[in-house]
Image 1: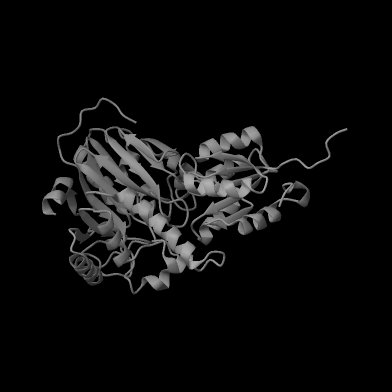
Image 2: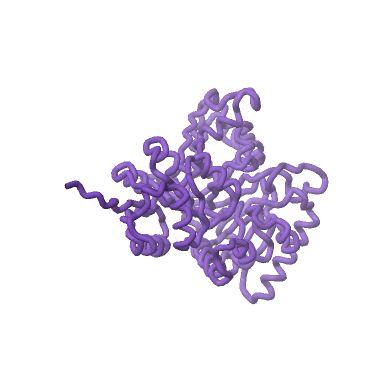
Length: 447
């Protein structure tokens, strides 16, 4: 006779944090789920297609395919499989993107069994419930690494007499290191950078790499006006992690479609390669790049560039994991929220540890921040505290709020320096200013 007992259900857990994976797996094992585990997005996709699990529990921020990309890839081939996205962040933009990518549920960390069981019951019919309750040989340049600010604002460009001191263009930073030109974000500041590069190189070809932290408009809006992209002599590589329903190439092309711009991305004359990155560590020839997912709506990363002169960290959009924000979640206690926030901050401190130059999102004053919880941006004292904890040598306040004039930014610098003095530690603090150029050797000498 055939066995009429219900078969054990299978769940695929895709989570890059080993401890979180262990804890969630133990919850499922104890309730008679067959658990498959993957430590990154690409491995998760492969396991899903091979084993066709009943449910997939997928983290949002992972290397080698983020949760949106995983969801999109699996949904195209495994329609019946239920996908539950998990994240430590509660942004409505993330929830909407998860739904658009094909997720059935969106849960907040830390995950409890009651929370997970409730989600599984919602997505699975009763008859499907479980039976029990890169390098090359190029020579390293002898010149010290340097960075130059071309755009320092967040949200929207704000030119005018009250912002002329620090500048009104949105995010764009140029790094020269070990023979490479690396551009961090392509906000409106990239227009002036492009003009400068064409003047500098003349008839010589320009080879450069653009690293996109995320595709919010203030970080990509300048790309259609980047002059080197219109010259066939140039080779441009654009790298980023974006991917919900549309990939990085589609998003960059979208802002150049006919209703918005007269020239399409595919009509640009230069040799442009746009790539979605899967790894969290890679090389741009001699420069090693490490990326880290940060606390901001959507897929957003910060970068740390390791050069022969030292390292540069660039986190233009990042909100601290505040207890107040986390404790608004009804399913966790204050102690759990505090533990989660502490662990996430420790990971960020480790990522920045010992960095020569850190460029950090400091959009709000401490007084402004409580009215902007959940916006995805940092506040002055938390940013200074983070740089001090990470033993950074030099901090640049960045992503200036469009409402902050030069006098306000001067005041924020003064308050930040007072905080450093009170700490008794060594940290140089400045506000990012358009046109300012910094050499890495100078950071160590000044400190």
